[in-house]
Image 1 (spheres, rainbow, N blue to C red):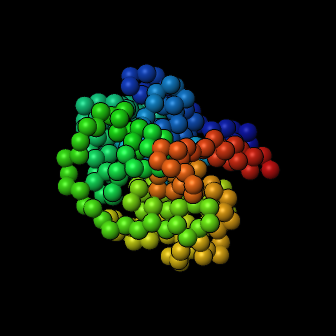
Image 2 (cartoon, rainbow, N blue to C red; image 1 turned 135 degrees about the vertical axis):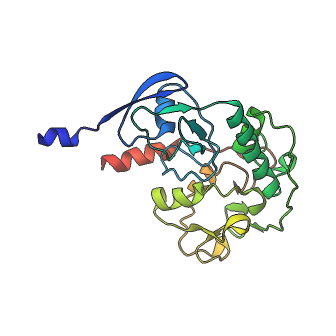
Image 3 (cartoon, helix red, strand yellow; image 1 turned 90 degrees about the vertical axis):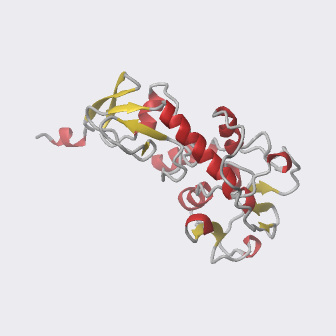
Length: 242
């Protein structure tokens, strides 16, 4: 075996929605689908950040596998047959969205990100008209201790975008997740007020990648908070070229 052959990624051939596609070994189903013009819904995934499969909205069917698999963290395999949309997947994605709405206090009409929210947009795209599950109405707080930003735990969906961008792009790792399941919530440093954090650089990257109104800029009123996420893949590319 020549040294060059060890460096060349192996090519995998598979089918996505009946379409013959090829991919490099190690590529994820989500990436290969997008390369071929097939869109799969996501919430926790964001180009430029590592994928963690937290929201499960990108579930797909793989022939021969009874379980639904998250496309963002499932590697392609030779001969794989993937289905990205079906009656079963629509049902599960709607259920995931409804559960997200029921776990916290998402009241869109008074949210700073109303009209600019990924969760809200995803619910509209999937025809979600109501929530079939009982609302938990958790007692969640609002941390406005930072001089420029606000953290509203009522809007958080625990996608961990803020945790990843702070760690992987900014290198500060101010954010983290404490607790498990329904009791989990994001924290700064050792669960101290954001404004007292010794590691936060106030760069605002966490605010820009947040998919909902959980993280916002002070001074923004209802429906004013838009997010700018294009910088994440750019910064990742620049790091790779250094």
